[in-house]
Length: 316
Ligand code: AVJ
Image 1 (spheres, protein in one colour):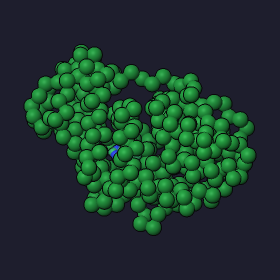
Image 2 (image 1 turned 180 degrees about the horizontal axis):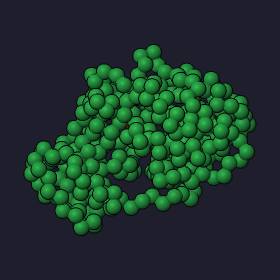
Image 3 (image 1 turned 120 degrees about the vertical axis):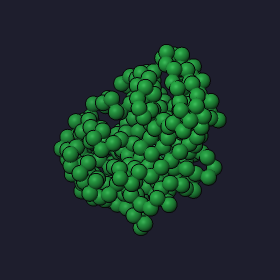
Image 4 (image 1 turned 30 degrees about the vertical axis):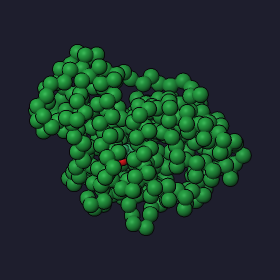
């Protein structure tokens, strides 16, 4: 079972802050309760959501080279591991070069971590899995290093949920848990045509809409809110100036919502939106700047033929 952890903060203050702002917002970390993590896993299998399968293909083609570049005698930590479905490829490559390997997946979802742990223990018996239930944006709690070189994994373009300043803050916190010479494998989605980007965040089956609305389901259940799910619409937009996809929940009617647990009443205008997520899409220059300002240097990049996604090895 998952160990220790840095406390996962109460959702009340986050919700209260976000919904009192103008424009209103809710932080994307609220997506990932058990239901949200399961919905995200379904998103990764959608035909429109190219990110996961493209990154997986890049890892499948280049994992041995990535691991050899990272170095010898590795221990692996993974930020936002979720169900860690792509990590096997890398861990398998590590275990071809060393007898054992410690692996610390960090995630806010204990359910997702438990699944990952079970699968990995069966698939890779030489792996020492040490899951950590934590919100890595509040700082990191890691078992002390065991004399090995640390390889940090931050895959899936999860970094893209943060605006440029916050992304640098997250990477700097990570850097403080690394020594110079340690390695980071960072997955980033790349800027591309809106005709590819938008369907990835507004799929035909409506799974992304359900994922977005799950935030309101959660507020209803956990905070006693009375959001009417039929009166909020999933909206995805491409913000070219900021190079990001934005997701919003738009109120289709003028409406008052009460959230008893935090003593909040919110009046929504018709058409008013709650901003729930940014998903930044990068250029090579943007990645270099972000890594450089966080105490890393990009050493290698692997991409797919279409240039849709990239995995970078950066050195602390
Ligand atoms: C897990 C943050 C990488 O931004 O693509 C999927 C989350 N949001 N569909 C992304 C997400 C809508 C995803 N990340």
